[in-house]
Length: 253
Image (cartoon, rainbow, N blue to C red; front, top):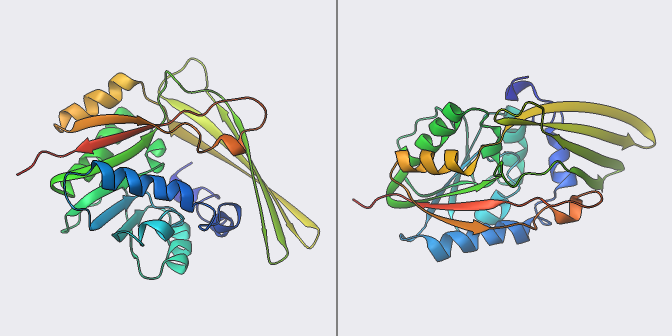
C-alpha cells in the first residue's frame, strides 16, 4: 500500500496527538535539539524536517529553530498545521522534493524508515544534501539491520471521551531482503462504541554498510550516537529497540 493510502497517516492521522501528545514528546525532541546544537558546525537557525508527520517533534523544534516541515501525507500535514500554525508545512516526497531555500540543518528523526530500497535511501539523503547550506548538518535516526529485533509495542491515550489503544507488531519476513513489516491495530472507543482498524506498513531495514556507503556518496563526515531507550516504555514484555543517530556534516564552501 502506498503512503498516501495508509490509514495511520490519513483517515487516522487525528489519533496521533492523542496517543503521542506533543507535550509528552518534549523530552525526546529536546534530545534531538541538543544533539543539533552540540554537533553542528554552523549556527543552526533554520531547520528542514523531512517526514514531519503530525508535527509532534515540531512542537519543540519551533522553540529553537525556524522550522519547515515536509510530508507526503495530507492527513498528517493537516494535523501538524493545527498544532503548529507558525510552521511552514509543505506537501512533498522526501525522495524528490526540490525547494529554493537552503537550511542550516535537515532532520529526519524517524521517517527515514519508510525508505524501502537503497535507491529510496540514496534519494532521501540526496534531498537533504541539496537543501543544506555549506557546512550544514543532517540528523538521521535509524534502525540498523544487524541490531534490529522483532518487538511488540502498545501506545494509549484518551481525549474528549475518546479512548485509543494502538498495538504495533514488527516482523522480519524470511528470506530477509531490506524490509520489515509493521502491523498496526487500533482500538478506538467513543463512549463505549468500539471500532477496530488494521494498517500494514512495509519499512526499510538496512545494514550499517549500506548507510556508510550512502553517506560516502555525498562526502558527508559522519558521527554515530546511540539512542537506545526512547521506545522502551512502549515495548510489551522483554525487548530492545536500539537506534543510531547519524550526525552528518556537509563539506564547507
